[in-house]
Image 1: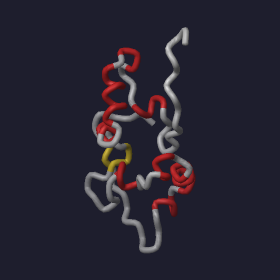
Image 2: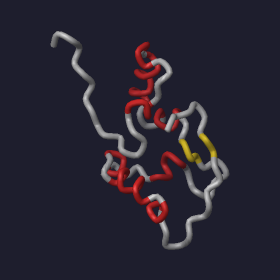
Image 3: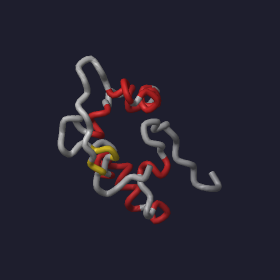
Image 4: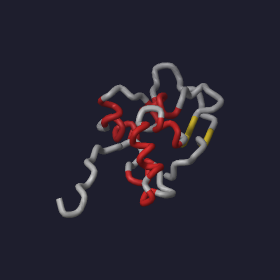
Amino acid sequence: MAQLDQAKVIHHRLIPAGDTCASCHKAIYDQWKASPHAANGVECTVCHGETTAKDFAGTPAFSTCDACHGDQVAQLKSDAFMKDKTCVSCHQAHIFAEHKKAAPSGQ
């Protein structure tokens, strides 16, 4: 799934009382539940918005990551190697496995 400069806005049906995102999106929810986002309380609505909103983001905009990860997004935008790449070029959506940056060669 490619990340866009602008969110891909979709109409999302209302979630019936007693249901959650996991009711329909179990596999995605399970991936998220094991992620650093879940461990830090970053719920689905933080990135996608409320399901009742007219601008619910099926695919969140690149700027969504910038709201919490400004330093990383700034590095991404300034690194010539990362030209035309976004967060999801390296971080699979909903999993967001933590990784360390490789040490410069020779170290």
